[in-house]
Length: 213
Image (cartoon, rainbow, N blue to C red):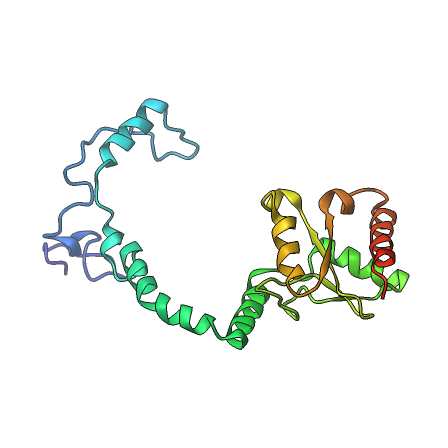
């Protein structure tokens, strides 16, 4: 029997909602009558007037989750606490490389569709490049896609221009140049053409010819 004296269903010990007796209602203090009676029907789309009323009613309300241990404030405190420790660990080159490899393995599906195209192109034409874009090689905190295997310090990077900043090539090339590498960038414009094999093969062979051993 529920505390109110009524008998609940067999699967319950109390009438639904009666266990919150004494707790304030979730909408206490909020002006009622904002939503029309048909608001919870399937396919209902609130008008602009109703949307503005909802925004006005909720403006200034405190987010109840912000005080929780794992809320935004909690995450900020944890970050501030762990940041000095992580910065100290990050100075260790071995730790840094292992972390970058782990991040790459977990965050990306490798190889990408563009990388698969170049892998197949290299196999078909016996090009001296090895795929390392899965975290095998890290240079200056960056993971190149392909490295030359015949003694030339040459890197191939494939990427979609719309996913990166305008100076992406410049920054990447600068990092790899610190280790003596030259970089060939193959963009989505090259890899999405109908004759992409011919375009990419010509670019790869041209830079190999220019880099004499």
